Amino acid sequence: MIALIAAISENNCIGKSGTLPWYIPEDLKRFKKITTGHTVLMGRKTWESIPEKFRPLPNRKNIVITRNTTYPVPEDVQRYHSVEEALTHEKGDIMIIGGAEIYAQSIDQADTLYITHVRTFIEDGTAFFPTIDRTIWKETEREEHEHISFVTYKKQ
Image (cartoon, rainbow, N blue to C red; front, side, top):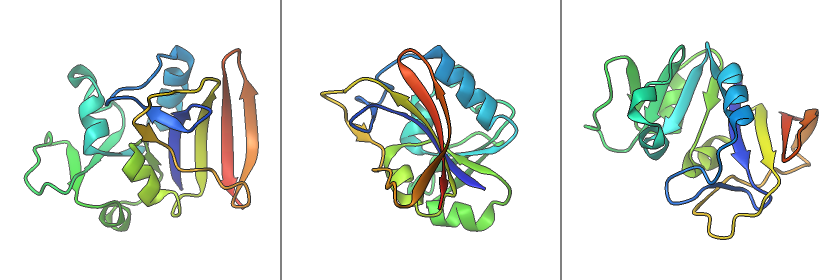
């Protein structure tokens, strides 16, 4: 399985100046539950946005995508130079956790989307999730909360 996991606003915003535009403890708990025990693949900017004390994400194989061939990563973190290279070499369930460029490069290879829809519109966002084409993606699960919805989509 290749899955993308993200929290997105009503206008598909996922980031604002290198950070998440919100703090939603329920979403972070869901993220941990879904990704623990799996491989997480992220771009360099996403890696750098994770506070150093939480890197690498525990109980997960961490993969960082960067074009910089000498970018330093810890010994227990795998570095690849493209999403394609990583998906060719890595086996098992892969959870793609961002950012915008990585999502755009991998959405066509994914078979599952774990999306937290955040009921807000971010005016000055700087990073966006690709449009979820409802002719390709079918909603299979939905869990409603006060300001968010946890939705799972499967490729049709």
